[in-house]
Each structure stands twice: as C-alpha cells, then as structure tokens.
Image (cartoon, rainbow, N blue to C red; front, side, top):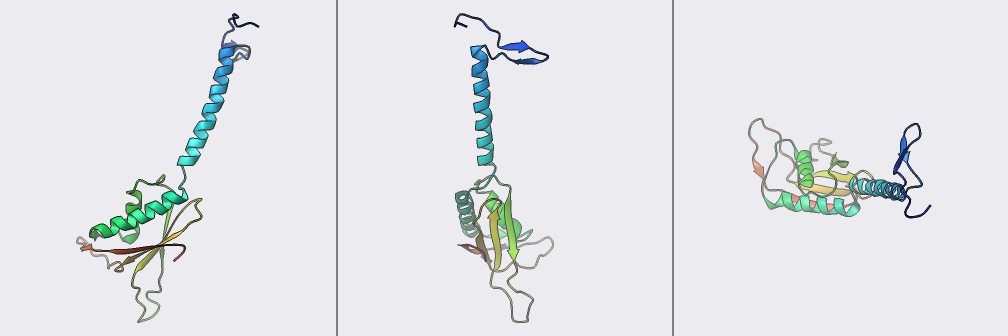
Length: 158
C-alpha cells in the first residue's frame, strides 16, 4: 500500500468498524486509546482527596472558624463540614468527620473543655483531630447566639 492509496476510514463487516489499512483510522484508534487512558487518570486523580488537600482544608477551615463569631444552628459537626467544604480543596465527597466522646456524662465532675472531631477522607491514611472550644451549647429553638470559637488542630487521632 502506498501513501497515495485512499482507503476508507470505516468498513462494514456486519457492523461498522475501523479499517486497519487506513492511516487515518490507525491515528483515530491511537487517539481514542490515549484519550481513554488520559480520562481515566484525570478522573481517578480528581475523585479522591490527597494528603496535602486534606491537610490544607482542615487547617484553612480552622482559621476560618476562628476568624469571626459563628452561629451554631445544627451543631459543630455540620459547622466543621461546611467550613472544610468552603475551602474548595479536594473533591468534596468522601469526607469523614466523627465526633469523639470526651467522657461527658460519665461522672458528675467530668465535663469536657472542648468538643473533638476526627477528620479524615477515604483512601487517605492521615487523620486530623480538631478541638473546638467552648463546647457546643445546648440547642435552642429559634435563637442561636454567635460564639467566638478557639480551634486546635493536630495530626493523628484524638
């Protein structure tokens, strides 16, 4: 076959398929394979949190929570989740925020000085401990006061 041959890009063999004798069809097959592999790499990279994205999001959320008084309407857990998602780091999904029981209620004297949350993400080995003080106030219907929070973040479990 010479360069002057004009082979059709598609041929009919019970169904339409690429004609492997056509140079254009070979280039289209190669471009399709490269495109599929590139799309897979893009989706797998952007679909999961990385260690640096999680670290940056947790620390930025802590700074944002301390920056101004916060109204606590649905509890600290939703406040922390909203603050992390507002940083626009990571894919947003697969975020795991677990409240940690500091022993409140186990005795008359035991009242925690802060509410603690372990923050992690699927497929990320790192976990961060976020402590918010003062502890979450009891929920009141209709009115919630703005609280000035102090937030401490440490790497690892609480």
